[in-house]
Length: 542
Image (cartoon, rainbow, N blue to C red):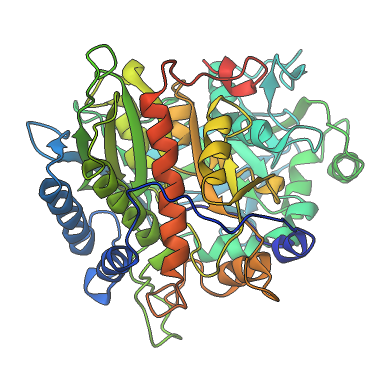
C-alpha cells in the first residue's frame, strides 16, 4: 500500500471505541488460520527477496499464486489460456548531473542548484528534454465543475510552464480532493502547458521535509508499455517538470504582482490563491536512460452458475509485489519482506478463493481473482489490467480489494474505504455483522486511502469498489487497536521488520477473510449489480 504521512494516526486512534457482539457466524465455509499462515510465511520469506517488480523473487511469488489457483480448479484468466498477464514496463533513470534549471528574470539569469534547491525525475518518454518557456502561476492548478473550481480561469498557458503549489484546498472532501490532486497534470496538459513546476510549501515542510524527498531522488520511475511499445504517458506535451524548495522558489516571483510570502500566507489562512503571469522565463533540461523489464499479473476465474449472470464478474484484487531489497547499509537486514504489505492480502485472497471453490454451491456471477504487480510503483499492474482487461471491463460489476490488512490484534471493527460511495456499503455492513464486527467511519480521512490502492484504477473506469482495513478497536481488554496499527506504520511499514516474526494474529485473519468472502458472496448472488450512489463524486468520473 502507498501512504504519505502517518503523523497523528495514533492520536486519532485513541478516541475510537466500539461495542460489538463477539458471536461469530456459524455459516460454512470458514477460512483456515494454518492456511493463511502457510501462504504468508512463504510469500514473505527471505528467499523471495522482497518481491520487487521484475525481480526473480516476484516471479516465484507469481508462480506460487498461479499454482494455488490451478490446484483449486480455477480457470486461467490471463493471456493465451494461461494464468499470467505478462506486462512490459519501462524503467527510467535520471542521468547523473544532467538536470538544470535556469531562470531568466529579465535582469539576469539565475541557476537553481540540483538537488538542494530543486528536484526532477526522469522522462518515461524521451531521452533528452530541453524546454524554455514563460512561467504562469496557477494556484493549486485544479479544475472541478462539481466544486466550482477553475484555477486556470482567465489564464493563457499554451506553450508555457505552469507553476503551482502542492496539495489542494482544505475545504475539499479528502477523497475527492485526492482525486483532483492526482489530475493536475491532466488539467495542465489539456490547456497546452509544456511543463509543470510544483512548489514545496512551508506547510509541506512540516509534514515531509524537502530533504526527505532528496533521499528518494535516484529511484527510477516505472511506466507500463502498451502492446505497441508506447509507454503509458497520456500527456506527452508535458516535457519538463521540477519540484522547487519553498525558499528557492522566491526567485520565481521576483517580477510577480503578488510575492510568494503573500501566497503562503493565503494558504495558511485557508484561501485559494489566484493565478497570474510571473514575468520570468525558465529553461529546464534533463537526460533520461531507459530499460525494459517484465512482470506478471496472475488471474483466475470461478465461473458463475446463473445463465443470465455468469458473464458478469466480481473482481477480487491483491498486490503481490513489495519494495525489494534496501540499499541502507546501516541495517543488518536488507530484505523488505512485506508480510503485512501485502503477503497478508494475497493470503486472504487465496483463502477466499478456496472458500468459494469448496462452498458446495457456485455463485451466480463469476468470481475473478487477480493478483496484481507493481502496486508499489504506482498501482501499475491494476492500471494495466483496467486498460487491457482479459474480460470485458463493463462486465466487472464490483472490485473487492485486499491490501495490507494489519493482522496484529483481535479487531472488533473494520473500516471500508469506498463504502460511502456505492451500494457496496450495505453489503459490507451486512457481511461484517455476520461475525459480530462493526463497520466504523474512516478515522483518518486526511489520508484519502480510497484513492491509494489497486481498486482506484477500476474506480476511474466506473467500477464500484471497496476494500477493508482492520479498525482501531480491539476485542482484547486493555489493548488499543489504533495504537497497535499506528505503531506498525511508525516502526515496520516499508521496512525489513515487516516480516513473519511479527506477532501476527491468524485467528483475526480468519475473521477478516470470512468477512471479505461474505461480501463477495452477497455481490455475486444478488439480483441487481452494485451501483454508485447518485450523490457520489465518483459516479461522475469521465
